[in-house]
Length: 140
Image (cartoon, rainbow, N blue to C red; front, side):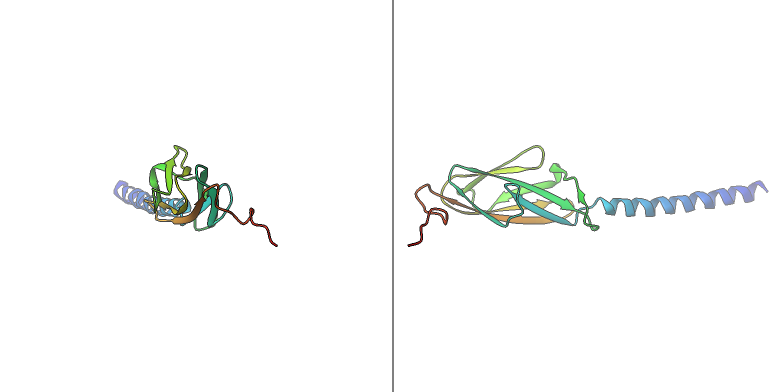
């Protein structure tokens, strides 16, 4: 009789282990980002224009498969600028970044979650003070 009880206990423990594995897989998927969204100056923009010398604040949100926002892990994230002569990037400990304009031109800022893979990019156009922008142009 004791042997049978031991076998039943063993089967029960194996069953619990399978349920725990399934739960952990499901639970971890709910916290795995599948989409990243870049925000330039707090707005969901793909491009922005600034004057040389100004800094553009860049933040990113990540969402899971269910569409819910999940916290970013700064250690997993990488920001890059395609032209470091136009924009210098500084990454903050909270996972945000700042891109300061060094000279007139266009630079693309890219974000990549190196563990899960989501990425996004935005374009920053830096102009000199002397370069007219659409706000400076007058229609005649």
